[in-house]
Image 1 (cartoon, helix red, strand yellow):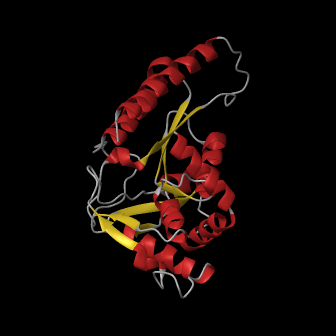
Image 2 (cartoon, one colour):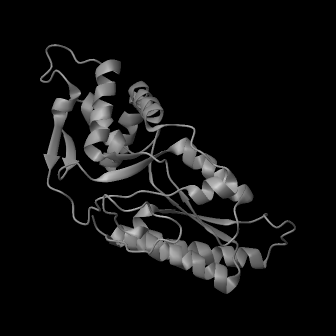
Length: 258
């Protein structure tokens, strides 16, 4: 992937938004303390990778990005923090774990598995499939963002995670088992079970081994908790993609045209 887009969007784009926000506030009469907040949504990838025995990332974790994407996100975090300190811009930063749920791009890991499985195409898994990610259902993420906007402390950072660490191969097997129940294969298909479509491919460069998020601060200060377990969230997600073939088709066509 060409890193130029990461630099243009995450660094230059964030810088331009920050400048616009400062200019906007110079010409606006703020009557209430929370009439304006610059909420910057970032990623856990800025912290680098964890070993299997390491404690999850917290808000004080050292930044150690390992890819051009995560480095550009780390840069945007630093820019936001600097505008809060230098220009007194009311900012809040959030760092979240991997999101999943309805309407997600079919290029992303979970929708890709679902989309390729129901079309009886190989399901690609990088490396040995043992890379670990913490999975956060999108509606739980949204509820956290709302709480942070309403009650979060200006200038603070909050980690948002799902407390659902899973290896990539484990996620693939869970989805395949769900599809076996929800959309059983015909006897004349080339495979009898969806998991037979799983194929291991060459690992991608800069593929961090493990991410995990500590959400204690968010729970303690704002009383936020997830409503979905990984199993309830993935059940909703798989069913949504099975019921929305037209959306998937149009989205895939759009990707092809671009």
